[in-house]
Image (cartoon, rainbow, N blue to C red; front, side, top):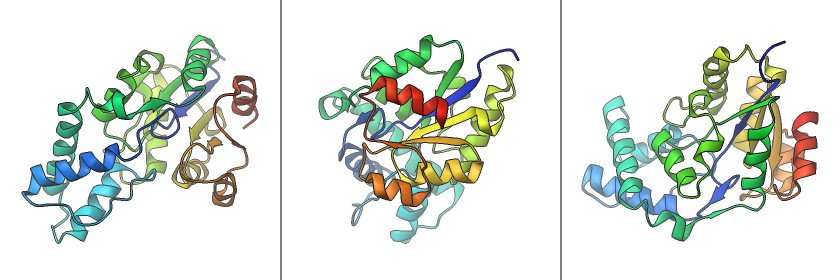
Length: 231
């Protein structure tokens, strides 16, 4: 065997960093910029891919869901984050243990790590750049929420992109995330999972979604590392 033994794919929001409420603000601004009117009601982000959220927002506002309308809102969302990129670290924080965990796996030659996130690529990059974390993951083996509506399909994208390192089997891929959407993506794709109860979902909810291993957070590095290798 050559190359790393594990491909570890991190969720971003509420797994590595958190800024509860900021994303919804950006959606409201983006919708107004894209369509010239206010967004009605709440936006449920909660681990769903950006394409999934955009489709629901468009339908809920009587806008035909086409590639063009979806891209219009996605571009406006990326622009909103870019315009307010200096505000993000004011509203956000790195979750306990996240930096140490990323640094640990970045040093381990047996592990190659990327992100598998519901975010747009540019937004995910902005969020990690805000805290100097972006250099710890490989963006070329990552997958993003504007690439497919189904989060499980993003796992396939990441594995294909990592083929230049080696052909990772499903058993050699570990997702780390905080929502039932992360859990279902791992189960559907047949890869391994470490769920963290750092978001809105409790340990019980993550277990009910199908997670076998659930930890409270990333602060216990030894436990996290053991969980990743045992997942």
